[in-house]
Amino acid sequence: MTGLRRTAGAVSAVLGAVALGAALALLAGFLYAIVRGGSTGAMLMWILGLFVLAFLLLGAFGTTLPDEEGEAAEKATEAVGEGDKDKAGDGDGDGDWYDPLVFGLVLVGLVAGGPFGIAGYEALKPETASAAPAAPPPTPSPSASPSVPASASASASPTASAVPSATPGEGAVGWTVPAVGGPYDMAPGAWGAGEAVVHVRSDGLSAYAVRDGAVRWNVPAPRREAVCAMGPEVVGNIGIVAFGRYDKPCANLLAIHTSTGQVLWRQKAGGAGIPAYGLAVGGATAVVAEDRVVRGRAAETGEQRWQRPLGRDCVVRALDADADRVLLVEQCGTGARLVALETRTGEESWTRTLPVESTVAAAVVSVAPAVVALNEEDPRGTLAVLAFDERGKPLATVPVNGPAGTLVTPEQVAETGRGGRAVVDGDRLIALAGDKVVALSLQDGKQVWEHHPEGGSVAALAPAPDGRVAVLTEDEGPGVVLLDAATGASRGGTTAKDPGARVSTSPLLVPVTGAHVAVNRGAAPPEPALFLLR
Image (cartoon, rainbow, N blue to C red; front, side, top):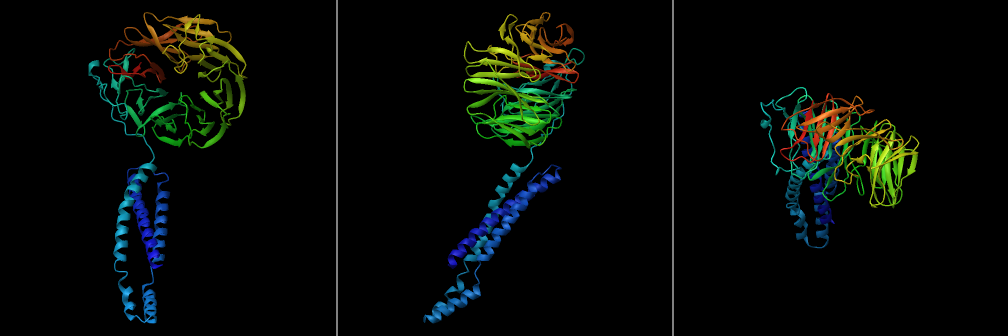
C-alpha cells in the first residue's frame, strides 16, 4: 500500500511541476507583452488556472507523503510480534532513495513545462498587424522600381513596399507595388478603405496609403494556410476573410479593422467550412455561410446574433449583404432559389424559385435592387443576369450572350475565362462587353447605351463614389474614364503613359479617396501587383 501511495505521489509531483513550469513560461510571455505595450486578452486567466492546477497536484503529492515516524513504529511493533527483531529497522532507509527521485522528477517537470507555456503564449497572443516599413523615396526614373523574381515564394509575408512613380501629378501613376510570387498565383482581391487600399493575397493582407503608397500594416496568413474566401466590401472599417490549409476546409474566419490592421476576432467554422463566396459584412452584422447553416455575427466582436439552418441537401452558392438585407442563392438538389433575409435578425423576407434544373454557379451582382448572375452546368440551362423587385417578383432576364455582346460577369459565373465586376445603378446593369461598356435595363433587358473608349480597350469597371462609373482602360498606357451612369457620356478621367504600370489579364479597379487603384490579381513581374492612378 505504501508503494502505491508513493507512486501516486511521484506522478502528482511531476504533473504539478509541469503545470508550474508552463505557468512560469506563460507568465514570462505575459510580462513581455505588457512591457511591449501589447494586449494580453485571456492570458492572465490561463496563467492563474495553471497555477491553481499546479497547487492542486502538488497538494495531492503532499497528502500521499507517509508519516515516517508512525510507519517506523508500526513496522517495529510488527517485527517484534513476529519474533524477528532484525526487521524493526528495515524500513529506516526506505525513504533514502525516494526523496532524491521526487526531487529529480520535479526538476524534469519544471523543464518540460516550459515548451507548453511558450506554445500557450503563442496560441493566446492576440494577432496584430506587423509594423509597416517606411515608404521608399521617389525615384528619378521608372526603371528604379524594384522588382521581385518570379521564383519568390508566394507564401512569404506580404511586406512589399510601394514605389512612387517618376512623374507624379495629374494623369500620372502615383505609385506601384511590385508583384511577388509565381506567374500563376492569383490574389483573391482588394478593398478600398478610404485613405488606403487593402490588398488581399493568398499569403495575407497588406494596406497601402493612398497618398504615397506607404505600407500601413501587414497581417500575414497563419503558417501553411492561405486566404480562401473574402467579403466583397469593407463596411464600417471592418473586412472579413477566411483561411484554410491545402486540401482542407476553408474554416478559419477572421475579421480585421482595415484602418489599423487589428484582428478584431477569429472563429472556426465546422464541417465542410465556408464557400469561396459565402462571406459578407452588412451594416453591423457579418454574415457567413457555413456547413449546414448561415450565421449572422456581430461584426465587431464575432458574437452570434442569429442562425438559419439550411435544408437537407442544400448548399449556398452565393451570398452578399447590406445593412438591411442578406441575399443568398441556395441550391437544394437540382433546384435553386433566391432568399432574402433581414440582416439584423436573419428572418426570411421572401424567397423566389430560380429557373434552374442542374448544378448552378451563382453570383450576387447587387443586393438592392436584387440582381444575381447564374450559370448552369446544363449547356442549355440558364446563363443570364436576373433582376427582381423589392418583394422578389422577377423583372428582366438579361442573357450573358445577347445582342449587346458577351457580358463580363463575376468570375464564378464567367464562361469565357474573363471575369469581372458588373455595376448596378438604379434600374440599369452596366457591364463590359468585349471592348465596350454597355448599360441594359433591369426592367425589360433592352440596351440603354454603350460606350467605346477612344483608341483603347476596357479592362475593368467599378462604381465611383460620386455616382459615376469608373472604367479601367488600356491604350498606350493605363487610364480611368469616368462615365455618366444614366447616359454613358464621358465625364472626365486620366491616362498615364508609364511603362512601369501594366494591366494584367485579371485586373480589378478599386475606388479610393481622390484616385483609383488598379489591382493585377494574376500579376507576375514586370507587371506590378497594384498601382495608383490619379
